[in-house]
Image (tube, rainbow, N blue to C red; front, side, top):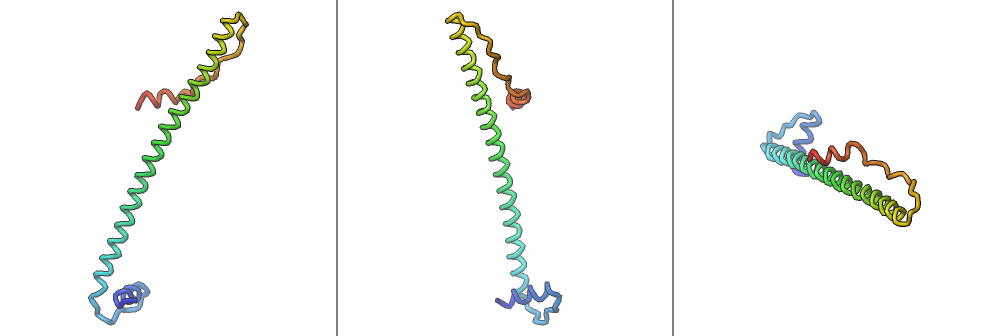
Length: 108
């Protein structure tokens, strides 16, 4: 371990530094720089995660709309086939999409 590191650790432990070395100052600058880099990296990763979550939400809404469309299209095809064959069609339609899904998409 270098002298600057020893001085840094002895000061933190409460043991007075009697060497009078000026080498501890650059060590602190590097430690502060490392700390700032860590903070910036965490902020960058948090921003990336927010963007990823938003993208997943958008894709999930689109997939939900597609699945709902397929349900309605299949029901409508069965209804039309029954009408062509003069068969009574008493199957209820699929449930409507969730109330909040259209308003969220329309607002974006």
